[in-house]
Length: 157
Length: 291
Image (cartoon, rainbow over all chains, first blue to last red; front, side, top):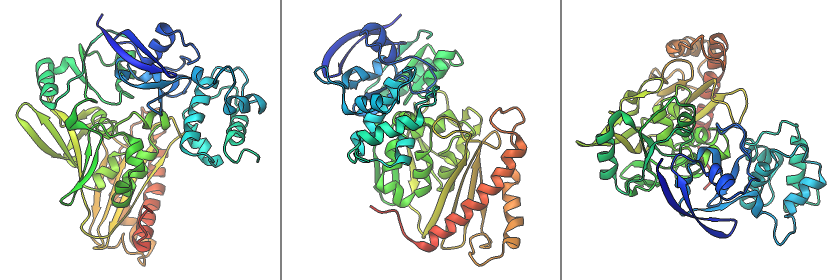
């Protein structure tokens, strides 16, 4: 089993890891760094439960080898809250009832945060497109859209 | 996941040498949105995975020079969809790139990977065929250029040799005014592959190029030079038989789970006609995408 050392920045903190080259970024985050907020689910890039940001762009971490992340800056759901305070987006998910079983929530949050980072005031169709890669089997799509709208710049709507 | 060796060459020469040395035991890794799935399910079992994303010659650049737009092999769908140059000159390709998978997939999936995977449902294939793309491939003997019309052999098989890899995709800048559109039909946006994927262009000389995928083992390009299809004043009755002839190369499989052959053929007619109409409208409006 071939191992490689990689240097990554995860949620603002530099980490050096020895990873097996056939392990994914998802494996490294969950098993090596014990950041288990990022979920493993479909493993084919359809459900979005494993969504993380890599250099500011969301990816399915189940489809990216850990070695490919060498040198990258990664944001997981654990990096959204600051100083023990939920981010406005996280708070909006709670306030709007966008969390039912919660399994898809970390991926939804990271994808929604990336959307808001690039578009401070997205329309409903833009939110739906931005989150099209994140499935919610509880069917909270309406509430999730409401939460993103309320966390957006024009959040008073 | 199965184990394999991982190589991350820094130069094209290194990558070609690795491919040449390992032959069928090597697989090229670009965005990984197809390959990692296949590594996991065992349908690909390479001994060596060659990650080409840090090769300078394959950098994710889109540049125009001497009437040719060159798209580096590691350019991802997001960059293609957002490129002002691509949206202005090759609108239908930008449209196709914008509907591949989800944001997560488009941030990783490359144009080169989409064509090398050679899925009959590849959304970028019809626009590349319509725009007359050329694939630049490098191998031990040097570089060669493969017209995209010769690139797709059948599902999963391209004209590339085992020891070749794609360096870039070249698109000739249209020499006459052109309107084009890409359309697709899918069961669910954000996840599913296309049940039908269609692209049409019409130019000021009356030439209509219509290409479609996911309705046979490889994407098809057909051309009408009669001027009738491109003519906004021509009657539908005059266009219908021409369109029927252009759709004649569709041969959807009965075995695909995504849609029945009957449904695909019906949707091909709907989307094909719609793509022709939209291309004509865009040519007439002559309003390029805002920059």
